Length: 266
Ligand code: PGA
Image 1 (cartoon, rainbow, N blue to C red):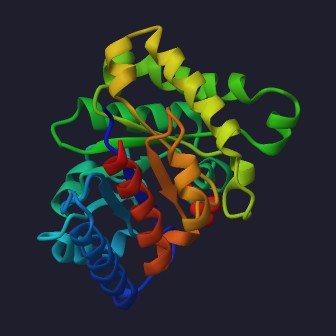
Image 2: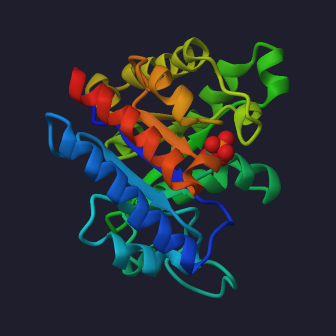
């Protein structure tokens, strides 16, 4: 069975104070919750993705805690004259084990393309650093209304598959994030999300059933403690990528607890 992953994307929010508060507060909440459950330990994984300046602080704080740390972006090149950019080796030194790739804000605000995202993905899976790419894909409202959701998602996947092949997805994570649901308070219904998750898994399964079966596909877009459980209960939803609600200890811990509940009742 796939293990749930609850990931927080802090975006360009935070401070040293908030980093300390979130990491210690969330771990205290979820560990207390696990202690009173039958399982005693966390039956799912937690990842936080702070802005680059807080990565070192976050990984130091999280060292002895059941929280992993990831970055929000990386440059595909190993090093060089790329002012303002950060490489995989740098992220590795900062204690990152994951990196978000192709978030819709990167695509829309910073002009990242399927090609540049595929290059970054390839550098993660072909490189010497153990950094798992979390590939974000999803359609805009216009695309959904035009009935193009599956075509958009398939094209975003194909761009990466063309470069790394299905083997490249062996240790990757996918986050399906409908753009119209990000930061809007509007969530895809569990059925809408499940439909796209199943489509993604079936597409990859056509290439390698074992890789597709093991792959974690997260849902992102206005996940809250109140809707996390019904979303995560869907057969092809393996956790969430959480924006706004990851900046509040009780909201993020509440979403984590939905994963614990589902994982332990199975
Ligand atoms: P949201 O953001 O939870 O605030 O909608 C999700 C994301 O951007 O990853």
